[in-house]
Length: 306
Picture 1 (spheres, rainbow, N blue to C red):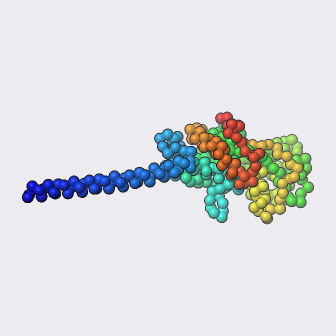
Picture 2 (picture 1 turned 120 degrees about the horizontal axis):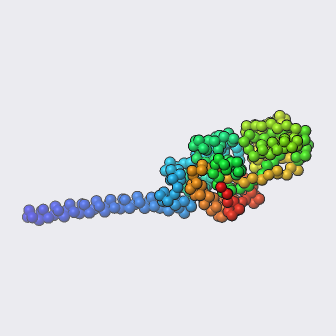
Picture 3 (picture 1 turned 90 degrees about the vertical axis):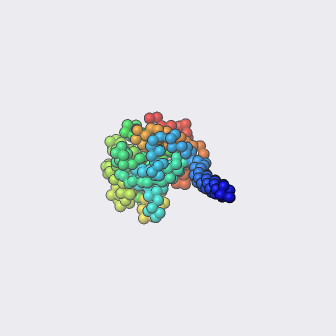
């Protein structure tokens, strides 16, 4: 009897162990299944591989911390914080958020920096990238690495609604404003050197620039066509218009800037950017902000020569 009792006891222990092992296996399997389905779900909506070992060190770090910090001068509608929602947005903002989501970085944090200091802050490592409708120019490529072209756009001439200024030829005896650090300042400086304008006034921001035209501090300003068009539709207090016969002096290619050490990460960004061009999502964001196909730059013609 004692023999059978011992046997039953052993069998009971074995049954308990087997049951426990089975339960543990099911629990672990369920957790693994949840994780895998989450990864699979993300993978279907992103271009990034879920395997962090196969990505650049920079992308691996960004994924682990869950966000990327970008520098921007906070100008609507390009790359800015919406004061109503406190959310990062804009034409560059929406493109970039989609791009980062596809790379497996869920959050974009923006640091406001004066435009002329953006690349300085980038190389000081206070931001990971610069995303602010920045023209890809040779002098900038000497101090930063640029992605492929996102889109192209040009300048415009902004004047008072009752102004008789219609084109560049009307600026001979006028004072013109431009924003510090921008390609548009260079345009205005060229006009000044050629005697095409009377005087140049340099401003620190877009808002200051437009206010100067609105209050008569300057007769006109040369600025970003996207910003000007958007601002005029959003701010009814501005008594301004686009000079009707002005022909854009130059059209620039827009890209985002990274540090030279992030070449691998730049290649990852470019790969996803090209996919967004091909699947139509990038054009969707351009149209959302009033831009048309003239702003679109295809994959082949959009390759940036470093």
